[in-house]
Image 1: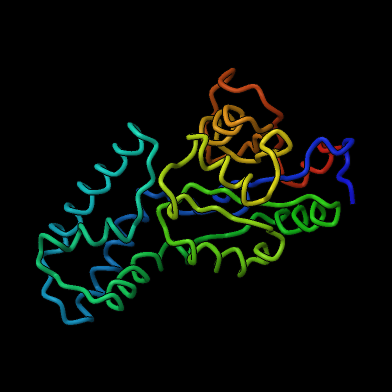
Image 2: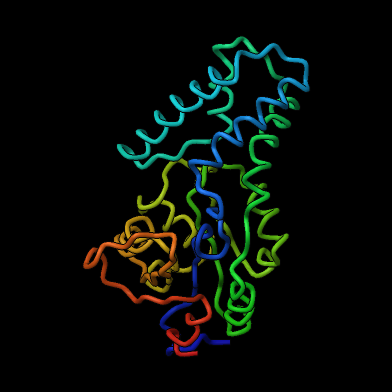
Length: 247
């Protein structure tokens, strides 16, 4: 089936957080200490000798800020597994591969518990799939791809996606152009025939347009938008996307 709009677009690519799923029902500033405490308790359950929690959390904050600086300067992604290894190293806590996985699971558990899906996400993806578009997902994330695949499957979204790229499996993160080009290659479409849909002006709109894609900004209450920063189509709800596409 030829997509509407004269076949101008062949692929619709979505951001994940605050576009399809909401990861900020609890602010990250509150989630980080909760996640660190969950991981810390798991170490205790494993019988590891651990420092005082305040010292453990302080070490985490130092490493996290270092990773954030890397993002600001180089647009390079980091992996939470690497951060967790760095976290325990000064405390001489040895972890097997299985123990590291369980440590990781404990860290991520509080984050997963508060994730929700936007009510119009599944219906919108199903509609676009029926209309013949190739559907992709490109998300900035430091977390494991399998965690996100499980979440997307749990909320009934994974079945509609033809390809997904999580930046934790590569080098760069949005707005660097490489992740956008990567997902287009995975979908076997050109960037010129791709539309990127996301909730951030810099990472999603500027990143996509500089990579050669069209962009749609989904305005979310959790975001602050700078007037005039980007020139793109704007929608308030995912369910408005098919109308813009002429469907």
